[in-house]
Amino acid sequence: RRRQRATMAEYKLAVNDANKATEFPIWRVGGTVEQNPHMRAFWAATISFFLAFLGWFALAPLGLEVAWSMEICENQLYPPAEFPKRKAYVKFKNLKTERLYCTHGRNADESDCNPPPAGSSVDDRYDPSVLTKCVCTTGTECALTIADAGVASVASTILVRIAMRTLL
Image (tube, rainbow, N blue to C red):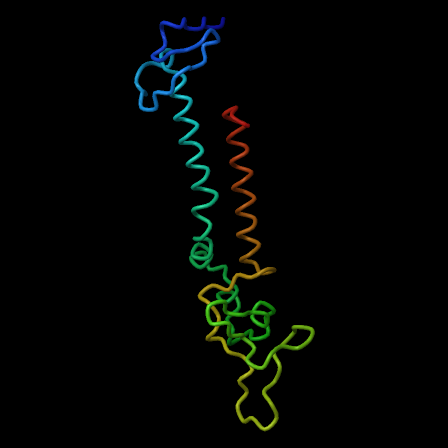
């Protein structure tokens, strides 16, 4: 059996004939569910939006730190000293210093770095010092894991909204 709607006099704020609020007392949160459903709904929606915004946007910059702690970065899985020809390394350019991992450029097929010029006694084609703490570029396991986490985050948010019957 359905509960009868409260009459206008029972609400803690002014309402019209359709029981919709006609005033906006932002700090009026007291009262029972029956007395103050308008402001309870407002604050529940506001807090839910804030948490969704925090989860989707504010935590994104921490992705590389999380990847580093999970040990899924390219330079953790494949140390540059042992695997200098990894595609992620050969294509790597440090955005801060604008230095390349391949000191003399890379091959046309991007399979390796170019050898040093003729007459050079040192093979310095690779410069692992330009690599960042966590190399996580397109096509690496790290990037795929972060992308999958993003998809899982969106999917879980949608499922929670459906479960709470608040899907917009």
